[in-house]
Image (cartoon, rainbow, N blue to C red; front, side, top):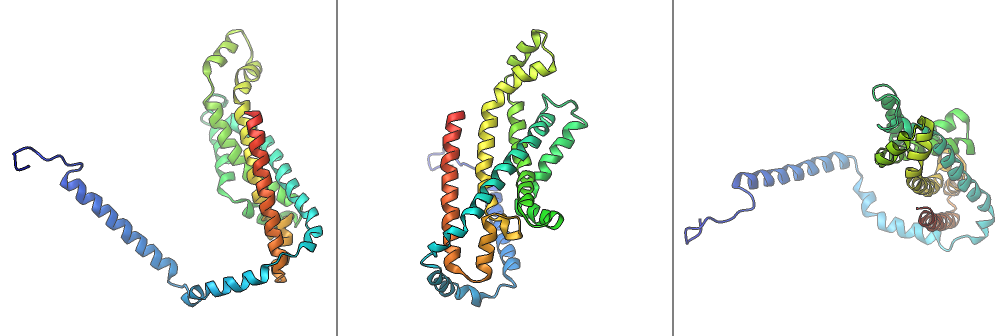
Length: 268
């Protein structure tokens, strides 16, 4: 109560304020416990010496060895092929999976849809680098393992976004096509596909842009591409070559970002 006898407005009650502060206290306590567990085996002398080591490494990385560029054109081309072919393969798999996962297009909500959703979740749960590591063990080192790894990783991403786009279509257009006596294939062709084509184009280009980034590191586990040159250069401590590879990767990512943005604006 105020001095004039009027009740004072409070944003929260006293009990709510106490619970709020208790929540913050528990959050801080959880952070402290997690930090302690994570750093209990940390050798802090390495951390304190890190700036010196970083400066020494940087001094050995500059200037880049520009003469090494002739050895990077083919691996860079392989990286682009891994991303492109992996994306195309993922589209071939993800499109039917998305239609089977969407509530309004699946033939069975109890049987088919859960299987399609499991495929999407399983694909998104495993990183492309892990897929590549497994495939290199099975198929041997090379570009094929990289292409399949990118495809398996991309299926979940494309399938999830596409089935959500399918579920959000305007049902009135579908009903109008169905009212003309059209069969299921015609309803799909004239009522559903035209509505999801812009989303499909955007998703495909966006995923290709992401795959450019992911394919640059697959060579670290033997799946080909420019990552293979990066690993080889690091193994022999050829730091000027590593710097050049970083520059090439950065330029490639920037170019793919620019290209994908232009394509998305043109298609959507």
